[in-house]
Image 1 (cartoon, rainbow, N blue to C red):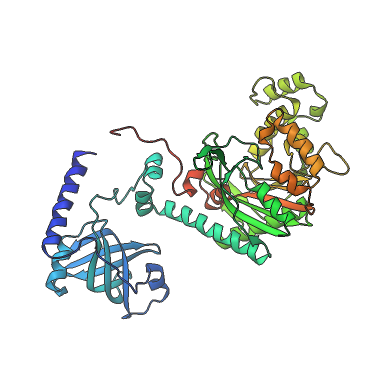
Image 2: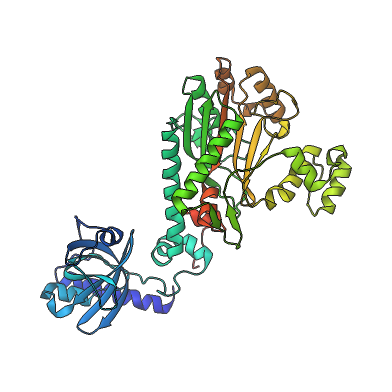
Length: 482
């Protein structure tokens, strides 16, 4: 902490003691009956009496006349204080106020000569004394890591941060309401699991001491939701927190939010239609349109129709018509020519997927459904009847990243067991035997989808990092003294 900051905090501590000597509780009590700044503006009537509470974020001293702005969840509103008109106890409290203090006021509405809606304060109550100064009022918090580490200050000082995070909150509400209207049942499934299944990812491991057993934080809720399909819940969804012990990047956080939904008697085409309607509806609701400016200056256009392209066709277009005729060595050479870096000893399907990610996915700005992926990439999906080398799957790509996968779900327990064991090899303890047992009782044919809530929020808010739409992203601890 700088000497200047320490000095300012010491001054505020002195004011704290002065308030207490006046018999004022610097950390107040309830202040009921308030309206937000947005509600006040929405019901504007000159002379109407209102009560509001908020944080002091600006103060203009004009002698006897004082103009301040209070900030609450609805925005900011100016208040006007005539010091001589305040009764003595409140006048003394006013003299000890600082930027950052939380204040409750009561008064009447009026419009200043400059046309600014304001509250003429007749009564004020200190609700919480701020003992540390706020960030610079003009620049706020500029350093990205500081903003994410001190999100409380970021929210106070940066309107763009508040807007992006508020959009995420409203997005979750919209997705939930949309699926409820479509007749889906919302459920909760375990976040601690004995087998980390439903996706190929490294889990976080923990220990339950009372039961003497290892558990894993879930990487996906899929297998539990499908067991509910077996139990008769024909349209089911969960907005869930998943945990994957993998890298952190602009598009990855170890703890993230997914929506997963399953619909009995549907398939991957039905789920594609559902997710397209859901995302377009969210864009209309939250942004007012289907064309959204992105942080890099590009425009994301969600106007229908969203094209469908088969995986192999997309790869051939990017890597050459003869791509699937090449052996592994030929694929490696072609990938190098395309500027795609590869790890050593990859199988042809893995090389192909790397090329797909770099030359198809990373270039797709507007939404496109990539369908019929290779069977070895998606062990939980149904094989295509006409071509068993591929599965009935879509991947929705937009904003140069995958937003939503959707499947025709595999419900054959024998084939599912074979594909699980092929996937895990010798690590048979990674197979969820309880899920396989449930499948033996009969799961209806169904479509399923996942939707990356954080990534979708990024695109709709037009920000460039997943951290901008997560209130508290994971960060390294600060070093002592930092």
